[in-house]
Image (tube, rainbow, N blue to C red; front, side, top):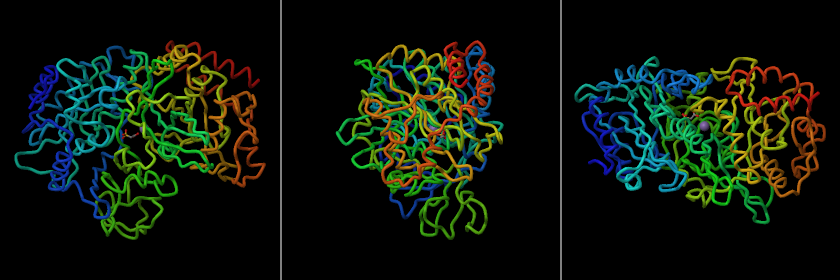
Length: 593
Ligand code: SAT
Ligand code: MN
């Protein structure tokens, strides 16, 4: 088979010559194709059917291949400065020559899959088409869930449509007749490369089969490459969830929110409000593409079609809607296989006395090691989420009213702030920060700044990205969403959580909606507009007055103490740092003085 698009056909044959697969297969996105791929992987010992969950399978990856590899991720453009100080860079010709040597014959013994996919509803004016070439059937089935794969994509592409070229290989050729034999195929870490060529709308990934390293529609296309396209074309590609909140009077509000990892983003995306009469529906849990619509408002789509969520910590308490979503037709990677044929992970809210751990070994809790990898994942279709918004696939997108940024701070930062204006909101997004977690990339004791939660995902100079944000504000004018900053993680001096979180976060969202309607009050503080205790709906929470005051307090001295570090951080972008950002820091200093 081939397509009507000569550029695509030429590229497929060029890659075929370089990678030397045994055969080439064009994916049609059908259920039978999905089942066939799963069958292949059951035969090669990579997939285990789960008796307890219809249509669901467990995979175990290689211990060297369990997460995105940021130090092997490159933005490869002609000028190093265009990649900026937050990205790894290599000169495109040099990187391509290194990778061509790796790609040479790398698909021997395997099938090369050609996966045409749409990010966003097929044919939406905000959607983009990609084609991933991969030698991994695991990638094919995950792409089936996470994107829209199918021949209808080729129809939209037509004879001369544009597409983003995504090349992927696990980097593990097989000799004739050899099988993977239950061993997750990948290459050693020093041969892994996740490379982006934003000037050519091209992605080359080698050596990893896991998540965002291999499912190239997600972080590689929908964020790194799309962020560059968005700047070029005047729209926004953001690391944001999208949700719809409907108030008791039936008014709909649309919220897009960016959080760094470990802040409960997927939980918020599937929020169950605890306040009576309010309804929340999920449109997306990870990525938002937004364009100004004909009415001047910012319209958002979720470019993805599924959720690739972190399993550990997901429970009926933390995220009941995710638990409901993954009851069937779900791919699990790196969880525990239980004796009765189910999957399990830490903090799932149910016990597991014995099973096979993510490394394939006998496991009991007494072993003192985690049974599931902390980055174990579920891949599940968005349609299976009981609170998926009926308009989640509206090609026109939903009009965004509110942007939320946030981070994980046990002190200093109050529950919620509204920005004074757009520019101040951009400052809040750019300086969003979390305290270090146990994760390897965190430096002990040092606050980690993750601007707009885009640090690992912005495909160009972060300073220019801030300029793009300021300019989007100018373009949107009065139609621009209002910007808020939240912190669900504040603690008392003796280490007690001050805020219940989860469904009660709806109380904070309610205040935001009422601010939009001009109904709720706010006090001016040096760091932004803030609710007083009477502005927030705290009914039924039983919080004591001193906890509420602490949660809503601003200590100017502590904020001022962080300014030198913020100045150092933003000055790291040199001449790319927008003067409007510098102006925000000066204003902040003056307000705190
Ligand atoms: O592996 S993904 O990049 O898809 C998810 C993540 O690490 O944020
Ligand atoms: Mn993410």
